[in-house]
Image 1 (cartoon, each protein chain N blue to C red):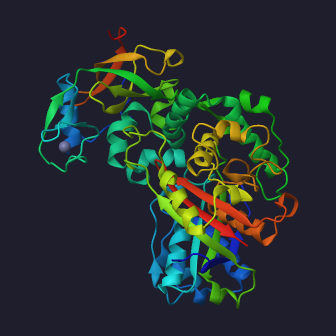
Image 2: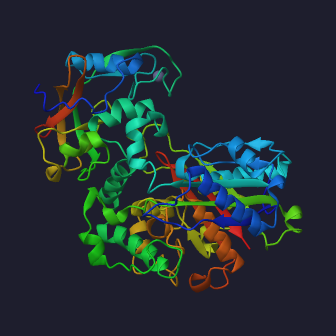
Image 3: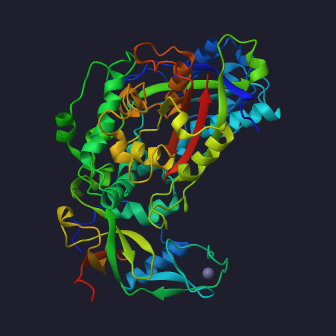
Length: 143
Length: 387
Ligand SMILES: [Zn+2]
């Protein structure tokens, strides 16, 4: 990673608790979501308990990494000082094959080329020794 | 139940300003509005025994100590962002009809222009943003940091599913601006707006342009609720609370994983409020809809039942929400063109309309009005009021 790409005042996730476990998998270049071992449902963001069946038994289940663009916004004027140099950029909601959605970026697609329904697949962007973010790239149309 | 047993008896506002700022502290400007509301009602501060402050801008204890409310016995803050004032209106009605308090003050205000800007507070205080650690760990690292960006995700999806257009967003901005021309207190008074101006305004967070966004303001407002019996001895004609409700989206602390992406707090709250009131949306003579951004007006008109989901864009076109249209919305100019004082001015304006005090922007013979609040990641509140 270049130093320039990682200004240290960008907001960082706290790498503790369940959130920290999620990002620990990302550091190993794996996207995993919690999956309830009683009812089988995936969930994101991480939570202690399954909201469908109240089970507290779960596992970190590896995602296929495939999803589609659900919605996005192109940030033209940064509203946080750390992102001033990054504009324009587009936070994107990706709907995964497992049914969960997560907020990320599509790193190889300019904002004005984004489309709802566009197939994407996960990639990983190392920010520091301790932190890797899950990001997405355009994928071939699913069969 | 509080239906028609509680009423709003006093309203107060400060002047609204941007440059050079109010010159008052955040508490000072709210106290000024509180005193104006007391004066309007004909009440002494010592009679106020309930205070429901807006989140993060002041504590009930400080209001009571400053104003001289020696018998404070009902104090709470609803953590619903911009939905808090109307949610507090409902809570005040419940309090006075249950006997938990006699006179409840709902104050709110800030130096939203000259003080800490909303868009900056997230950078320093993660607890000030809805979702808290969820936003910190899963949104902010990707650059989703501020309200127009959160809500833009919803607006984009609505455009995709229902064909809602930029011009329809513009129709909301134009209606608010048109109403502000009839309101000398509005920040955008004397500054009319055309669709070309709107479409030419710079993009902030697509699909939101600058003129889709409310005006950051220094200002404050307050209102006072009591029972119908106590209102008889006071200065003003009471404005009756026919029905009120509040609700949350699901999940409320995380935007992206909603099975129904358009279901907000108002989706469930509005039918409850109208059922309590015993009227329907068609009975409203006007509505004051929390308009932090243009699309939120369209969304709330739909979820409140003024039109079906997906029809909000058409509803606001062709003067539909302007004075003289099918449902005048935000007759004061709203957050978009009057001032952003946290939604309390929407309640104040509803009261003025129902008292017949709205001057050049008066809705003729206004009898029933609706006020909504919208906050955080889609919390909702609504009140149905009558004269
Ligand atoms: Zn389960």
